[in-house]
Image 1: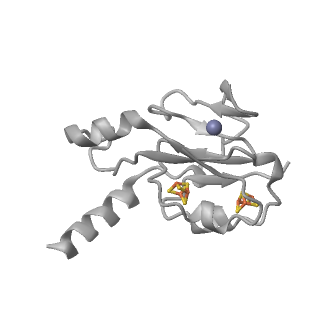
Image 2 (image 1 turned 90 degrees about the vertical axis):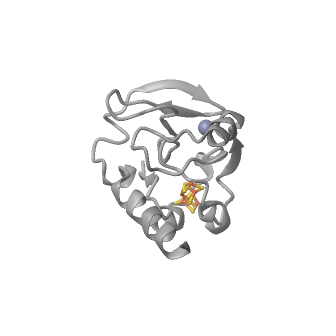
Image 3 (image 1 turned 120 degrees about the vertical axis):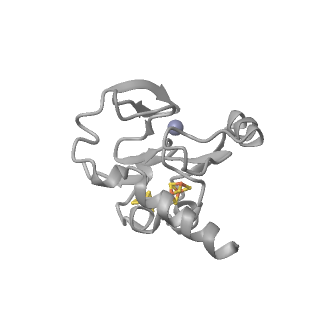
Length: 137
Ligand code: F3S
Ligand code: F3S
Ligand code: ZN
């Protein structure tokens, strides 16, 4: 039944770690590599596959479900849609992430222009899974 599916999805989301609630991000998260002009941060024991892109505008790719509202609401176009072809293959095979419940996505919101952020926090407030954490310098 559609209602049950929606309930299960809501429950799965509630159980997913939220980047915004992690006080150790960004300063306690080591840099792993550079992507475009931002860092990819990785914390052992927390990051699962992709880590967090961005520092001032941190997007946890392991949490992002490609909702897209961040792209829509950002007034200065910080985000790019970053396709992850490997995820489609996993979805086709019915693979889930470590929680066994979290929905996967075929793309993530990459903070490609985080230096343009004016810290309005619209993305952080509206992301349904709280995958974004904004940190003013
Ligand atoms: Fe845009 Fe989010 Fe910054 S909406 S301006 S990236 S706080
Ligand atoms: Fe992902 Fe949240 Fe944006 S789910 S696409 S970071 S609104
Ligand atoms: Zn990136």
